[in-house]
Length: 389
Image (cartoon, rainbow, N blue to C red; front, top):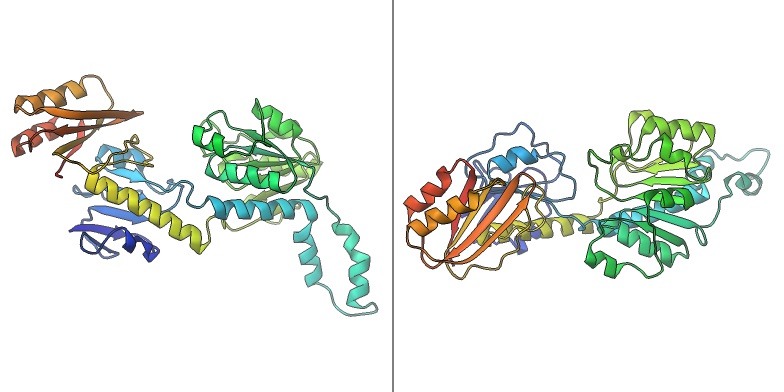
């Protein structure tokens, strides 16, 4: 029985994948073999020796110590794209909010009271201050064409917008799914300079922190609207505030409120609602549950954020899996130990990602406990496992 600890309330749809006959999933598990988590902060949590994997039911993993997990031989999964439709729909709402002054109009209506003029007359007299442009015919710049950006770009086309998409790392699959009406921008500057609405859909990395700063904003149209439903750190808040004050930027809409933005004119905040739909939560849990199941049973790694992807089918012979440092001579040391027992390697896969690597060997007979112990004692190895057909 595999014990999986839930650190947050998790949608019960995992029952369809993590069957009760194989798994015990609850919040009270001690020394778990695996962990399912949403937002709980795992930094500083002890990592027990038998922990195999962590499944984050969502995309962001800043609540998980990825390198520390990797160095304990723990694979961390997330569920990219499972919430894409939910975020896309919120971005479409943000486009309308950024265009038609709907937010200001709603706030104004809340203050209406009958007096010398009827409500109807006040509305007719006051609505002119909330006039805003239509989206059709305007240029939408989409920075990042992953699961969410792709859907936003295609939806922009459906709304009659001219869509510019920029992503130098777009996957082949996403390129096929992208509408032919989306113009492929050759540079970030092209999107920034030509767009009426700019929406960000890239992960937050050290290399792109504050990518939208004073310099980028100075190249935008002064009628441009900036939308950030990806990560707050992509935008320099002091520079956005200054640009809003001096008219270099028309409006900023974000799903990441922070103190410096509260009450700022022409800033529209939503309380991190991007993935807050029951459908999105279910999709995330289903995806991460399948990834955990396939890793635990088959050694397959899909959508890991600290180890390389290595998609595997159910083993048909004894399978040895090794999570290790990505340094020279590791594979030679592993195969020498395996062959030293007289085992034949029928199939071998090695994948690497940064400082970490994964080697999988299907062998013609079950390795002895001594052989597995020798593998685990290598100073370059974090964890070994034996999976039987």
